[in-house]
Amino acid sequence: MFLSLGKSGGSPNVSCPTGYMPKNRKCEDVDECSDSNLNACDKNAACTNTEGSYTC
Ligand SMILES: [Ca+2]
Image (cartoon, rainbow, N blue to C red):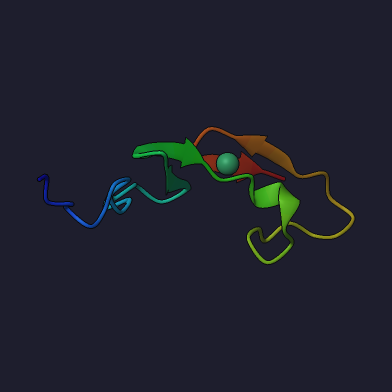
């Protein structure tokens, strides 16, 4: 009889630098332009997502 460890996938205990978020145990760039709450661009400015940051 095997004992289950309870968690099969494990929790994403990955710490990522600013601008990245944990995903599948890796750090993935956040698309700040997808949410106006994540960027400080003027609504008239063009927001461009970049690796680890974004530009306006
Ligand atoms: Ca980004």
